[in-house]
Length: 282
Image 1 (cartoon, rainbow, N blue to C red):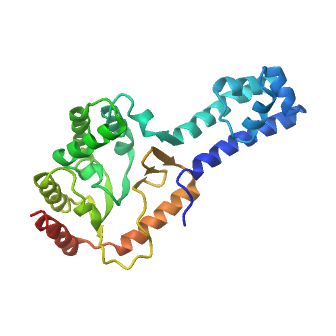
Image 2 (cartoon, helix red, strand yellow):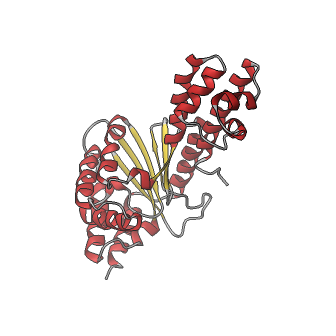
Image 3 (tube, rainbow, N blue to C red):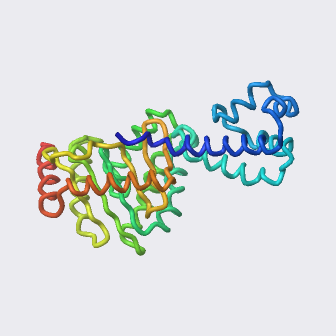
């Protein structure tokens, strides 16, 4: 099985802790010495060195100053913030509602040339209709008890989908057949959404594949993930967004995407599955 999508986050935290430890060792101080001079409990220095407790900016500045290398602090603080931003809980991202989160993706979408998107549970955001997005974002708002700005968030999601038709972008998108059957909204909303999938399949920049129920699986269904060029992957869990930047982990997601692509069907066969799902709405 693949490693947890948060493993690169932990690796970044451990790397930062190791740098703090090496700075202390180079200074000739013991961990207890650093804690005493900083006015901390003796165990805090050990927790920082073992990545048990993430350091604050003030902790890093104090550590570097005590160890005689205050000039090291800015780089370490930047590394710490990067590690903290790699695993971000949805409740933090959505604390003011969903609109700002939708808008925050625009710069990433505009600079990305090749999108690889895999969804096992819902229609990918870039391919959602207004009705489907409203049903989904309403459910998310209710579940997370976020401020209700669904209408504005849906408008922002529809606006960012313009990258499908404008700019030098390519989209390889995979969905599990179950996505075509999970009902979000009423039958009319689902029919509109599935019909929209048939429409976007004709866009020259879009390749849409469906992994059918009957596929002989060499790769199990995974959590939803997106790969932006080869620089970053984002994995969506129930509680958090995980931003993967370690090349070795991005390579795993690329490999998984390629294997899922080989199991998917395209063109007329994919259209037939979508049409069958529309017919099953009754």
